[in-house]
Length: 513
Ligand code: NAP
Image (cartoon, rainbow, N blue to C red):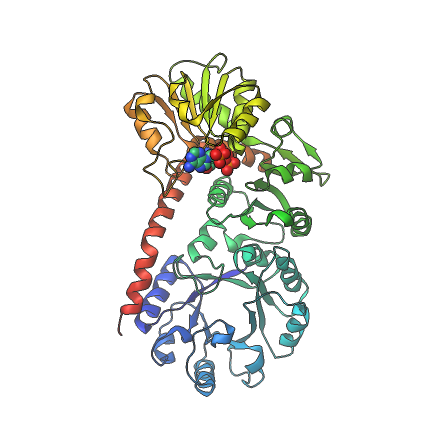
């Protein structure tokens, strides 16, 4: 079973010891002690005396992404000291590995890091590292393209010597997590999200509890969300926890893919056994083009948010936004015992991708649609396409409606004090559906509640479209209420994380031991 090695990089010995104990209590089984982060001379015996887990001792030079400021001679003394003391692993860079002889039971990780890219001769670098008497080879490069991951994972898979190879950076997450599937003995994570020591690292909690790294094996099917940017997507949290709930061994990854690399990346990722994707901006049109077959809703909208591979290895495109938006509006209408959109006057704010899907759904369901948009030309174009009325943005308050749908980002975090619709334009009994889901209670939703409207938040649509994707991925219905709770927890955790990170970084720098 692959392990998670959690890296501790702190400037004070006391903090290293505290974090190490805390990680062991949380269930960590392997910890990397980064001596180069300590502000005073590293006291190896103190750090390893009563160690609660096996350790990897590492002391990186700045050229290898570390902080060591002392002499090379002193660094070698520390590494040898760790070996003589019998630590479980020592990390030796390729150029020094031959100068440090094997001793006792300490296993040798022979490593190479490239923070600039994934060099053309990465396979040759791996071959050289294999000649340095390693127990494990560690090869880490910066991914400049999603496809760099493939080269490193191929090395993991084909190497005779156990190898940990993955990419850094946002593109690299796929190999950081999938290296276990190809036989890497462990991957690396950080103590917490705000203690990232190398680009693209994720925390032990995420690696253990969201991605469930130790459970990833050769047969674990992979899913993911394709987008650019993708860092703040809530989908990995939602789908991975749904897999866990359903007791399915599967993993779902955030996959950053640039617009011009969409097709090549998907073809390359086919080799990694991906079975399904959620698709977000800017790839929804490309996804439809890429697919072998498409369902009616995606063809109607001209965009797909889901790709699933069938038994014949064909990609099927569908659009779960369409039905999810419709069901969200129907939930609001049901509160006033109206069970169909037929004949309901709907005012839609915005003319982007989401507006297009929702506009089509409303028209299809017999709603009487009026569209408004800040940019008149774009709004008129969509209104003409949908065959509905257009009003200018300035006149949006004068349109009588039963249902208001916000398809603009106005009110989204951090601009939480903004609303796309003035409170006095809202009237009792209206259904107000805000597609924004972060925060759940936007200013528009709060004011609509005050006006005694029936409100539906963007969380509803987000969860319903994800639930429909999960069903397409697995054939099973997820627990939708659990999914709602997960998104709410994810949003509040992201807010807390954002608030705390600068504080903890600053406090350590100012502390004296
Ligand atoms: P998009 O294609 O970029 O369209 C954005 C729309 O919002 C455009 O009509 C744009 O008007 C308008 N807009 C942007 N900023 C504005 C401002 N300051 N004032 C007035 N209008 C403004 O985006 P999209 O993909 O349609 O997504 C729109 C929103 O839907 C997102 O921000 C997100 O909150 C929400 N969403 C929700 C879910 C869900 O599942 N709940 C899923 C996806 C998206 P112009 O034409 O004038 O630029």
